Image 1 (cartoon, rainbow, N blue to C red):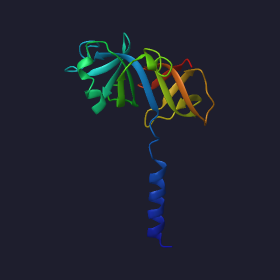
Image 2 (image 1 turned 60 degrees about the vertical axis):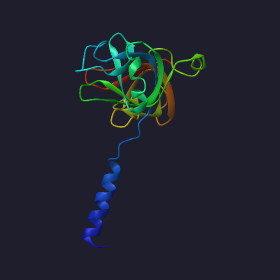
Image 3 (image 1 turned 90 degrees about the vertical axis):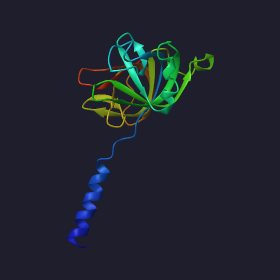
Image 4 (image 1 turned 60 degrees about the horizontal axis):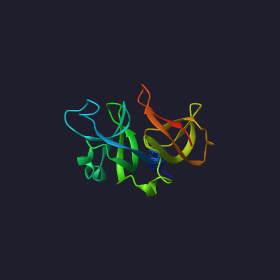
Length: 170
C-alpha cells in the first residue's frame, strides 16, 4: 500500500473519531414567555419557556414559530426537541414538536417546569452525564447506570460555565 493511501486512511479514521454524539431527546413542560418582556434580554421579542422565575429555554425552529403568539399568554406547552447552549450561555431547544398541555399529558409528560431527558448515560470526569451532541447534560440526584439508555425527569439549569445540569427526580 502506498504512503498516500495510508495517509488518506488515517485522515478518514481520524475524522470518524471526531463525530458529534447524537442529541438527547428532551421534552419540557412549561409556560410560554418572552425573552425580552419577561426575562429582559434580547433586542426584540422571542419565544421561550419559563422553567422558573429566572430560567428560560429559548425555542427555535418551525414548530416554535407556530407558538410565537402565545409568548405573553403563559400557555402551558409540552415541547420536544434537541437542547443546546448558545454563545450567550442560554439554553436553546430546537423544537421538533410542540402542543398545548392537555389531560392526556398528565401521565405521560414531565410536570410543569420539569424536563425529561432521554439518552445514553456515560461518565464525564467522574460525573454521570447524558450524551447530547456538543453539550452533555450533567446529572445530579438520581444516578442511573453508565453505559445504559435512560429517561430521567427533573429540573434543568445551567451552571456558571454554561454546562447543562439536570437535577433528576425520577
